[in-house]
Length: 308
Image (cartoon, rainbow, N blue to C red):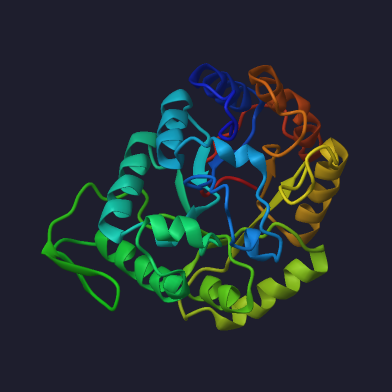
């Protein structure tokens, strides 16, 4: 969705979401960052380079944006791709996500990842070296909060006394989406998540990772679903360098289909041309050839079980 940049406003988001639903897209997505430290020292997205795309100088809050999108649409799945686990505590996040699921009529997907910014973790008084174990426990505590009352959780990072907590999500099992890609992250994805959301890879590579994770799945868990993510211009590309645009997205769509993905999430946030409200409002129509390529010819329900 329109989220990054100083030119994004409520009317733009509203028109974008309504046009996306009218054309027959499946879902709307938001991400999470807190601020733009001018003296950033963290490796951007796990890389050695510490430069961060300037679009991050202004970013709408993700849960607030998803609530606005839920109120603006009727069918589209709404989701985070992704929230940073270390910026949240389980009771707070469980309530926010349950609220989004209730108000949207059961359309919410919670995407989580470990994050990379030490500066942002510091703002939340979190040691970033603990982010892996915190994420594991956060998920366990979230599931406890969404389970039958009375709820309770006691762990290394979080302590929740016996309590009643509502509302519960409308979905009996609210889907968790993983933005993890490291070796440890893939193990975590296999253990805890319902959907894997990588940003790159050939169809063969993606299928191989899914097969490896399938062997690590706890007994009784449903097979991992795949939502591939692509960029019309990657956030790591220099500003002004240009990107792959619609042609690149069409190629990524072919990869997604070959790999067995249910959805392709297309991110235009970092493209050089995204410099005005009108540019954002044009995106659903600009990407419409992707819908044609998948055979979408009318709006379809976008609940979590109907996105193929």
